[in-house]
Length: 532
Image (cartoon, rainbow, N blue to C red; front, side, top):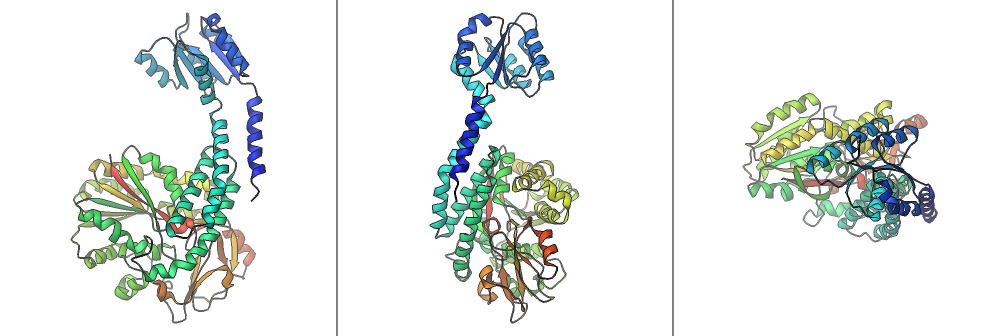
């Protein structure tokens, strides 16, 4: 990966931006006393326009644009606050720094309420002025430069970590680093999405090899494997309940680490967080992964022990209609006496209903809530051209998730739980990945329709392009037929049938899918939240 020219381009662009002269308007009735300060700023490359009154400042703003305005609070005629109000009407986005001798709280509050950019107490020194300019005018550019340099320094280290990752914990560290940089580059507006996506693709290729090598052993040896879907209640939830905690277990279907990181600040006022990741089982699909969570069993065990609660692939019946009964069987199997409730939120109407139910749920030791919006968004993006346009990129997809979290009943749900003083476990059953690379596969009419995994008895494929499992029972999966096998797509691949191939590929390329093997699908958040 030849990345140095790209980084060099970023630095050169920053240097060009720094060469541009920024315009500073400074309004102060004692402007003559500030000549040394203005000289200092001019030597730093700034163009400074001095005026002696609020009215002069307003007139200047009408005539030309400024990058930042320093405004004395106490001037004859119009006060600084009156001038500020007029300037905000003319140029609302220009940062205004209030400069004053007064330290009165009321003046500070008024200034802050008027959305000033900064507040300086006289006498000011030149470096204070320079810092204020850098903070308000050059902030994004400086952050972009620092972020670019940081990623450049970490790029090689991440590459080595990818090559040297031999354990499940190593891969969790890799994924966390990649998500961190993806969000940092996005927030600092550094145009390096291609670079981080390239490194994620490299990581996913190596991750798929790791999973191929170890997955069967994980299923056969549950005591030594990393934390996986069937282990969550036994190892993470029951110990809390046994310790006397009241727990809300909230599962957001199809929820990824980056989506959590993009919205966790909305909950920071109400909770503290203990953030970790666990491994979803294969297939990373609701039918398998979520039922494994709520039963504490692998899918093959569910089918064997509770055949009435397992719905196979060929059935047209909904695949997750028995979640509450599965939770009950798990509690009984571990000889627990917990009282529990189960609610699934499909729409805003039920969300409002659930909010009204919160007081009555307090008496339960365990309350399980499933929120389906993110999964619905993922599928809607595939089917709806409008939604696809709205969530065109990974960043846009995260933004829509955050918007839902903030403006639906979800945020209020968490706040009411916090007021109850109850602990929350926030997690998911699997994540999702944006697919781009089609892989041809042939199956009979009974083969399932999922684009990331296939199960059937007559599958034709290139074994080098998939992870195939010819003995499903060894990895805890049901066999619809004696000769059934499972195949899984890796990285950003998706399965396409040869019939009408071009149409199929163009329709599903660049859609979010799940069921296969990738860090995004398998390494999913498990957040323990304590109310403040």
